[in-house]
Length: 212
Image 1 (cartoon, rainbow, N blue to C red):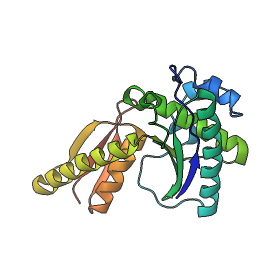
Image 2: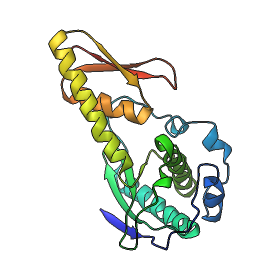
Image 3: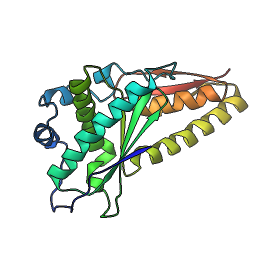
Image 4: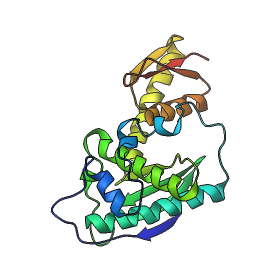
């Protein structure tokens, strides 16, 4: 895991979903704000919520992470926000996280209500990577452990559904989820030896856990 330091004092104001594209422009990233509004972070790169079956070479993913880290470092400096940046590879995608630094905590407003600001920031970062590498990016961005905590909660939800399906032999429909959330559930179900599928239409698409 590589760390990038991008720590500066926190200003009174911080980036919001509406101002994220302006910050990206100053940071040398993509300037087309419409590309963020027109599609969700997952839809913009033809993401699938099904279990992973393979991916790009590790060195390509490491390169994605480094480009993303450089972009985010500049973004934090422009916004005058604290935060260190961790870069890793998680399966078939780069994983980048803005974490608390010795100088201060990452402002939780970078996550926003229901993670909406984080989703917008993730999409801007993916576009910055695509601009630099010429390849579409599926990197995952986390801020202050938000996605990690949500992933743990989703695994618990999936495990409860798995136990119920095994006991009853009947399928179990879960609450509507984002593509990222559905993929976590699909992967957990697959590891348990059961089957699952997505049903419904965005933004109300959901996972159905099926008997083996």
